[in-house]
Length: 163
Image: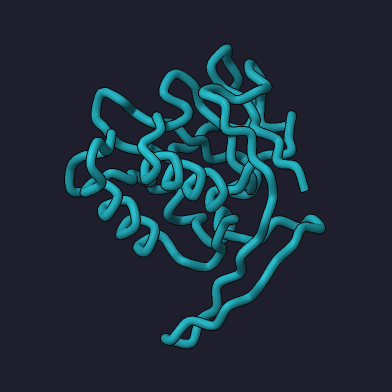
């Protein structure tokens, strides 16, 4: 399950809270680092996927709503499809990968993408960039950075979700 519509600051709060979990691999004041391009395009990255999957909309007290969806996301240490550019999707959404990481951290499991990057759904900067996810073990943070959509390499890949 993944929530859409939380906003960048709420996600940061959730990850700051996860640093307090016993044995958490996260540390520091900002365990979720978002590149400037990811912040600028956050509404795109936080958009509900245009697929048929179970979803529920829940009103929040401050008036906004959060949409929860359900899709299966590969949780292997590395993306199942490696060495690919952004064109080789479909891709997991930002809320899905963040929720996957939170669930793993809270249950005491090792985070995914300690040695790899996962492309995230949603092209940014007029289609020139895409976001990617990594757990930076050396700094104990989850990092969302952006690269040109044609970028590819042996450690960059996709986690195609299943509806």
